[in-house]
Amino acid sequence: QVQLVESGGGWVQPGGSLRLSCVASEYIISSNPMAWYRQAPGKQREFVASKMAGRDPRYSDSVNGRFAISRDNAKKSVYLQMNSLKPEDTAVYYCKTKIDGYDYWGQGTQVTVSS
Image 1 (cartoon, rainbow, N blue to C red):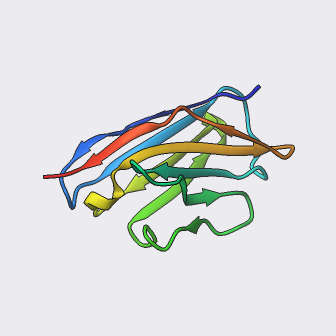
Image 2 (image 1 turned 30 degrees about the vertical axis):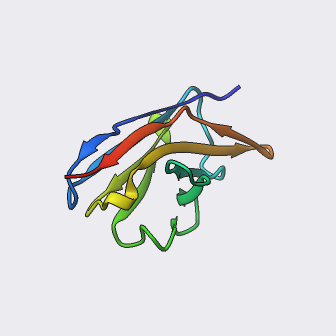
């Protein structure tokens, strides 16, 4: 069973940057998508970004142009570079992959944007 572990969350002031990392317990082939989701207090979990081989990365409208997703398959990792952070980006960020139709989730990492 694949395990995903996120890191890199923390507190940052508005306009700042953070880079999240997610490491898988085993190799994930590039044709399997890896994605980032987030869940703010009192809200449903929402899609942020995804990346799979042969396709352009996808972003939600709320982060497009500010966030960038990347993968390093050799390191079994996916990253989320977050720039120009806003208070509304505050949430727990989750890494997800889908293998053989099954979703695997990490435990999440907290991102707090405030002054």
